[in-house]
Length: 121
Length: 112
Image (tube, rainbow over the protein chains, first blue to last red):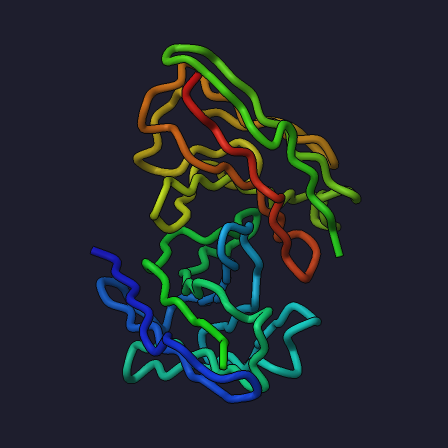
């Protein structure tokens, strides 16, 4: 069974940094692109970025590129999201998701339950 | 960035009713290879999103066949043929043809 579990969320002060993790199991982690999506309270979904199997390609939404860093450890089957200079606008549920990509298909086929990040003093 | 406009923002339906959701893109989602990366997701209350339809019209495994997708280039539609109670939630279209990938604002399906 494919399982994704995010962790590392919580309350953080403005301007500080936080690193989220996503533990993957039930599939061959190093065969898949992975991605991060966030959802502010009561709002819609926002794509943060994605990383390929060997970390040689990492794509970000431009507005977050200078604040967020996506990485992965294939030996630990874990995806990471390093967030810096956090502001109230970063308060959201953060989801990791597995990417299925093989033309003509690209989609998120499995999602984690999400981890809540609250930025507040 | 590609803007996906979903209509209506809210949809009230009775059980058994058929409904449609529109997703219009600010630019064509047909890429240079002739592929269209437009997906539909459902987020039930308190849950993570789940994939329903990928690449316009392909039904994800395990998703009931009352869901169907259609469209091309800039106009796409998700149809539910006979709403059931478990279908309630927010529906999102998402495009992955043009980076950065973007989602529609969502359509909330409620019981009338």
